[in-house]
Amino acid sequence: MLIPAILLPSDSDDRRTAERQPINQPSTLRDARSTATDVYVRDLSETGFSVATDSRLEIGSTVTIGLPGRGRASARVVRQVAGGYGCEFFEPLGRADVMQTFRGGTVIQMTTSAPFVEPAPEPEIRRFPGAVRLTVIVGGSAMLWLGIVKVVAGLL
Image 1 (spheres, one colour):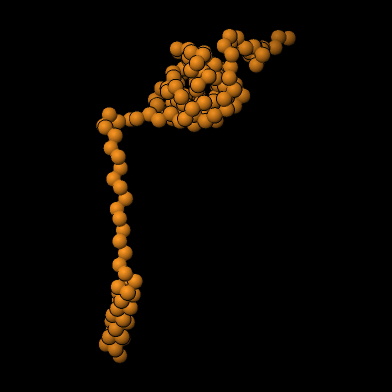
Image 2: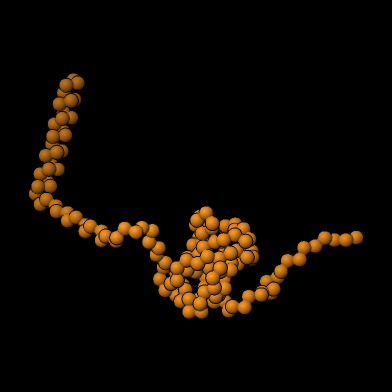
């Protein structure tokens, strides 16, 4: 009796030559349609990275990831691992890029070519003196009550 079997590579079947740096930081992954997916970058090397995500990615598909301190990088999804995926960069990063990525601030991508304009300052709010405010409140209340009394008197 023959039993059909499928051979799958194990986690120990690691053919990468670049040293991986543990990262465990959030980032954004975009697919070919520019659909954004929030991911956690588990590790990063000169040749690729692995991400933790609940989203489904197709093996062989092209993705773009935001790398704080470096910018965006394109990669190909090459394997599925427990809870995520492994991706290979189309253009390997330099060793200095790997060391600086996720060590600095957040990636900020400007999406407009218009010049940056400082926001307008908050307007100054001037309040009336307390006596004026009290007069408006008391006068408004007196007029409201006077109107109510006239309406009730007209009904009787």
